[in-house]
Amino acid sequence: MTTLSGKTVVLAVTGSIAAVETVKLAHALRRRGATVQAVMTEAAAGIVHPDALTYATGRPAITRITGLVEHVLYCGEGGAADLLLVAPCTANTIGKIACGIDDTTVTTFATTALGRGMPVVAAPAMHESMYRHPGVAENLRRLRSWGIDVVDPKVEEGKAKVADTDVIVLHAERAVSGRPLAGKKVLITSGACAEPLDDVRVLTTRSTGRMGQALALEAFRLGAEVTVVHAGSLPCVRNIRATTAAEMREAVLAVCREGVDIYVSAAAISDYAPERREGKIPSGSPLTVRLDPLPKVIDEVTAACRPVTVAFKLGWDEEERARAMLDAGVRMVVVNAPPAMGAAEGSFRIITAGGATDVAGSKEEVAAAVWSGLL
Image (cartoon, rainbow, N blue to C red; front, side, top):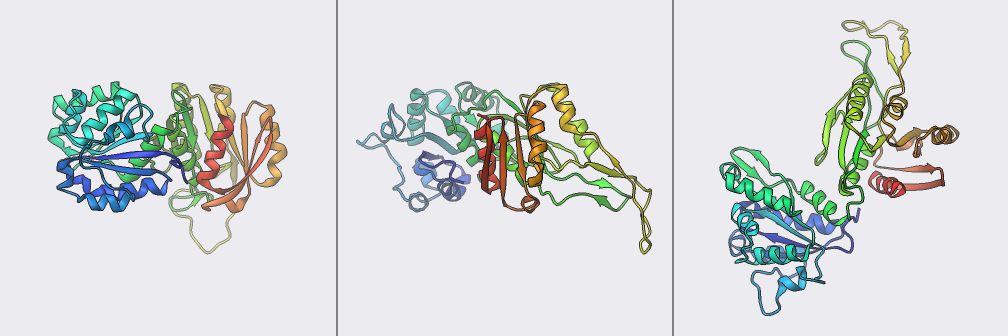
């Protein structure tokens, strides 16, 4: 995906050992289509040579402010940058930004960017004891109050380690998206359910959850507060674990009681549950299994909290039923053929009251088309 195509990101690097990760971060941003300009403090240049970031970005790294007033060229009014990304951001830099001190290249860029009102993302990295300092905590609260998106670090091994590269990139994408879903609570069900047949075997589907995951991350990029009910784990969203249809139903209805604006039913929720046997059914003999129908979670959700609802139907012959769902109040139905299940790509038909649109491509591209159709 080229979610950062046409965007210029100033990657501001400060003097944390996590600066060694910025070459990888610069490459990741460029793969998303961004133009990346590195800015480094003197301390950062002592950890990572400026040539490394010049190579990673394809542009000379800025290590000092010259008569070209680089901070104004990029982050001043009408400047070339769309985003200032401070990663890693040390406790020292956090304190200086919070107090309006600009005595390094990075803090001068930050003062200029904040004065312009452009998007700023900061990814702290430091020892855990520094991160827990009340002054640092207060400074981070101040940065957030100014609209700076602070990417929480990973607190482990006595350190507040800089967030993973993919998490920082997601926050960068969110910052420049315009956030059309800001203030919206989005609930997504994703992946397969597994209904126990006995203490060993389950009845499930080939769904991997890729579609639901792509929809969730795209919703985050667009500014939503996202909850995903599934058996997996995703960054940047609230994850609620559910493996059976009953668990998924219980979790979904609980979230609905909290309030939901948009519900996307992308999971392959079980239509039937087998009659469960205790222990392990002996092998080698024919077996008849009774399947009991399960309630339709989407029907209960639409009745309980009436959110904007997106449904998924499997099989091109489902289009007539899809249109019946629109008549019943569903905003959009996405129909896909069985080959798309578990695959990285597929062909989908997006059906709304305004008509049908065929979309083919990666699950990420389809997710972008779904959200575009709702906005």
